[in-house]
Image 1 (cartoon, rainbow, N blue to C red):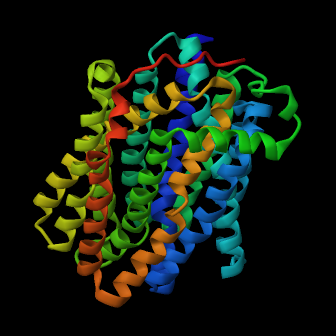
Image 2: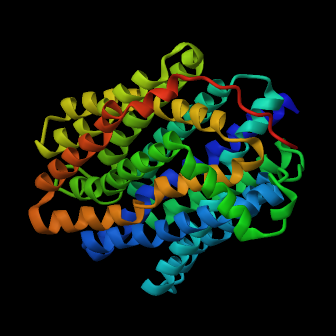
Length: 411
């Protein structure tokens, strides 16, 4: 199982994430070019993100009880059907706004548990592949960043050639490939046994058990809060600020795809370096410096209407730095969580990290409408810097350098 499970899991993530990145550009572009409204574009992000975050929270006990394989396959199969229905109904001229928003909401509701389940497989993959947790989280981040690069490039080309609705077909195909790969590579395994028999059959008690553990771990709780803030700003960046910037004359979806592809490609290189050297790098300073480089500077260069070469250099540097962030976070998180609680606690962490994302598009749209694109970018850049400097001010973050042996995953 060791080789097939690792590479099959990575390939499944690659297909689903590439398709999701295409949809991240195609959906807002479709709404923006159809309605011309930045606020409506942000509303679509809210409609998708709100159920995604909610279902991430609620899915934790289910993942621990049923096993991540079953949950991931079921959610990706459902996503295949729902996402594929959007372009089909559009071509049949049977896609009113209310139905479009409903399908987007269902997509988010399926994506939340599906992503959480695939992420919860990491301890099991570490155990069977016989490699360090830094190596697995580094490979996962490499796949994520590479998928982002390919998805951004594909989105630009697909939208320009076939239109935004047709680009969503690639997202549906990605979910289908993920289902097949997970079914082939990961053998059926029961979920992890809960920490105590008294709460085994009580859903709310199991959910509270995970929350109680997270709340008492000050570092994990702080990580979740910080990532919630940065994800809020990143959502505004991807879902509204960048599409509005690209919609200016002389730019377009192809240029937007190129910029995002450069960022994701450099991020993939950073993740490869983290996978190779992660066990020897000091986690805390790497995390702090990487976030400062990857965060605010890209907003500033767009706000100042910098030349394209300057934009690409800053975006590339930020992407390279960002590649180190997720491998560090993944290693720290999985080392601190007991195996029976992995599904619940990781779902809670990612849910908290995603909790503000539904509002990112709305905030971005409101700032643009009120002050213009340039000011909106500078305001969010300042807020991003404040969020990413916090680990330098709080000594608890230095616990990231304390390496612990993760508990073995239960089959």
